[in-house]
Image 1 (cartoon, rainbow, N blue to C red):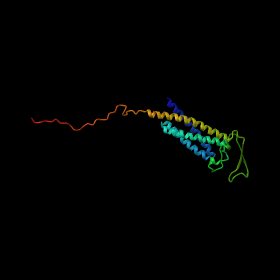
Image 2 (cartoon, one colour):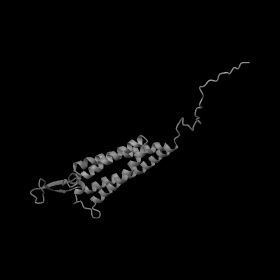
Image 3 (cartoon, rainbow, N blue to C red):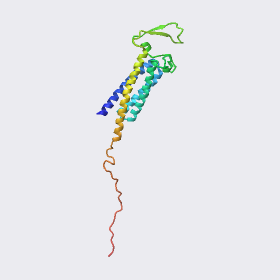
Image 4 (cartoon, rainbow, N blue to C red):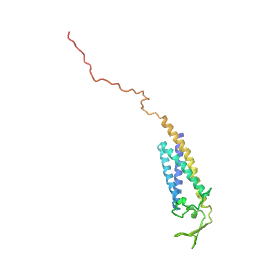
Length: 207
């Protein structure tokens, strides 16, 4: 029962991670955030691997899934520090998220709850083929939405890591204690004795 409960809980956690990652992937695509898009794709693959390992009793897959979650926590911690501008990180370094291929920022910057976007015509600050806008009236700034999203990922990853370690340990213990039915030791198997095909004939002697 304990193993079943652990497996079921891990499947639920992985399913929540998958839904959260797909939702995040959509908004990162809308904002052309190429670095998060790549990280989200790898995370989705790792979560699918974790679900498969849980269902198919594959402890090695769960170990790989748990190792990825360590990297995933580190990545999301970096995202949190980036948007909160911790240390020397600054949101002005947008090339970190877009690989310096575009000037886009988070999709939530212009589409957050209550945000009012006002274009600024003929601005000298506008690069070629771009326009300057002002955003006001947001109920929650976009950087805090990104922080909350990353914090949710960290929260799910921590639970996933704990349960992945637990379930993989249960699987390994079962593999070590498994006794193959019909094994040689179970039934005191004795190899067949070699028998001679030479038939002995009686020997007659003359009186």
